[in-house]
Length: 335
Ligand code: NAD
Image 1 (spheres, rainbow, N blue to C red):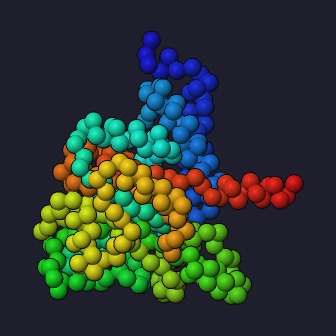
Image 2 (spheres, rainbow, N blue to C red):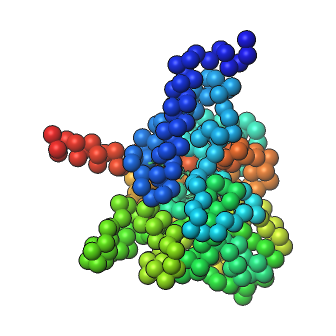
Image 3 (spheres, helix red, strand yellow):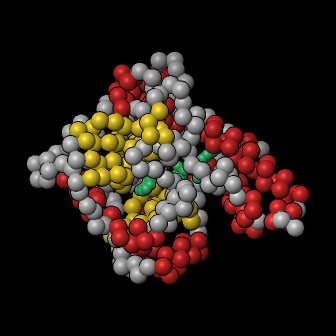
């Protein structure tokens, strides 16, 4: 019998159903209109991954476990990224995080991890040629995104030209980061929209997405968007040795780098960092949905490589969602 014949019909049906549901939710989410909380989406995705782990013959390129992101809207010109943009694998518990560390350390001798916050915003790609911002795009499906250059030019803190006072600009630099609306600014924007008789945004992430993907950049210019950068894609004329080295250089060039990241050498320190931000998740001015732990050494990153959708050298430790608590409370209040 072929591998497929060994998969019970009900499993195959559940698999097809989950693929369909996840695709639908993903479409709605990236159109700014999700109908289920993220945690519920993550649970469905985990069920799908579980089925595919037990029945690898069900994995196709088209499965939601293998692809990332969003349909590209016709409102913006398509742009091909110079280097693919990826997503991140998740750990939802200490055990899952330990399992990741175990896998990584079995492959390579890791001497340091870079720990940082997982900003709940929109992934954006910036291209600098000879130090000039020539293009900005959304992540899209990772290969092709939407050209939002004019909109991104209106974001405070995103330099039009790299600062070359202490270091010359590289010929080419693709920078990746997150565009978001800080909490206070989000509240003010919603108050303003309500005053103008317009619909407010459901949460800061939706507000950032809606503000950034405006057809008229003059509207985006009135929105208090910010950006923090957390990686690079294609680059020529510069070499990076460590993730922390990337951040040092990006900061020297005037790009907005967070000061909340830490390079840590022991697992206990990494655990403490995760624990600290579990307790202090509301300290930053923006929303976070977890922390990201990356192997600091770039040569080890290369050795660990990537799957079709995420690097093996990084993991997002996701915090338990707060929206579920709110929902449960709402239900309790309603009954
Ligand atoms: P993700 O949000 O889990 O993580 C990947 C992204 O995190 C990266 O692309 C990057 O842009 C961003 N990121 C933020 N801070 C970062 C940092 N410091 N370093 C590196 N990257 C950082 O994955 P995703 O593919 O963007 O989206 C999938 C998630 O979206 C799901 O887990 C789910 O929570 C949500 N979703 C929800 C629905 C729904 O219906 N509610 C539908 C689809 C997706």
